[in-house]
Amino acid sequence: MVAEYCDEQGGFIIRTAAEGVGEAELASDAAYLKRVWTKVMERKKRPQTRYQLYGELALAQRVLRDFADAELDRIRVDSRLTYEALLEFTSEYIPEMTSKLEHYTGRQPIFDLFDVENEIQRALERKVELKSGGYLIIDQTEAMTTVDINTGAFVGHRNLDDTIFNTNIEATQAIARQLRLRNLGGIIIIDFIDMNNEDHRRRVLHSLEQALSKDRVKTSVNGFSALGLVEMTRKRTRESIEHVLCNECPTCHGRGTVKTVETVCYEIMREIVRVHHAYDSDRFLVYASPAVAEALKGEESHSLAEVEIFVGKQVKVQIEPLYNQEQFDVVMM
Image 1 (cartoon, rainbow, N blue to C red):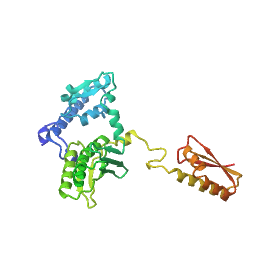
Image 2 (cartoon, one colour; image 1 turned 30 degrees about the vertical axis):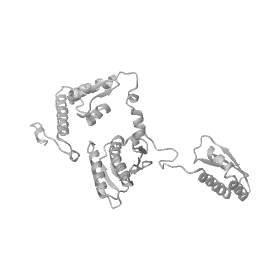
Image 3 (cartoon, rainbow, N blue to C red; image 1 turned 45 degrees about the vertical axis):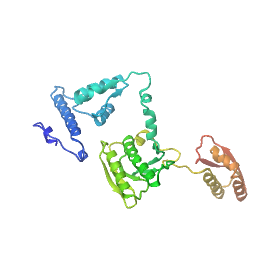
Image 4 (cartoon, one colour; image 1 turned 90 degrees about the horizontal axis):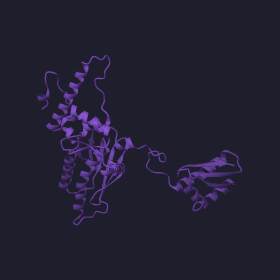
């Protein structure tokens, strides 16, 4: 298929990522690479002693190269400098895209005009709502990404099997879209709602494969496992949107949960007893977050009084507004 694009100047190395890619896309990629090579050879002939022949593209040009295709109607850019840079880039390397470029000059911010800000926010959330009332829960870990499908409030108008089947079918489209939006790669485990009907399972799997066929990144679906989970892989390209836009939570340190107020209260009481056995002091002062301090003065005051009797010393509690829920200090007075 690619042989017709080769000439006496060279050929192409076809990588595994080309598996399943259509002829039109391969032709476009080959044409782009030939134009790049032509420019490199032209620069090589220049008389300068030092001259960069080729370098990694800027973000805007990289996005255009990797994601622009014939299905796009328009490419709107609100920055004049970026627009002119893209005009130059497409004119040289992707001429079929030049006419689709448009410089946006409207008063409304371009992210607001196309609801991009909200789409980004939704792509960072664990829960993805489905139109039927069902939802997905997407969790990303170091080892893999898991997707759990739930019916939510959707009970359907027929029997339960139809409700489950329709929710799973809808979920396949949402999953494929979220994988692209979030740029999730590696091992992906999908926990569809259990289906007893073998034909339903087959049709859900087919729907998932059809939805993933639109993805430019290589994917592979291995079918249902013995446990009823769908195992698939998606090639890692760059970091996921979560890793690009977010940092680890300074409070839970990536756990996704924080200790309850009650748990922290009992940690404080154990720390008071521990300090009492190790050092001599007249009394104790506890600095804690507002929620924990209020609990020690309220519903946990009886337990704190028992600790005071046990250590034979007064314990005073003081609110520290800047502390998070798990932070506290026990000070000897």
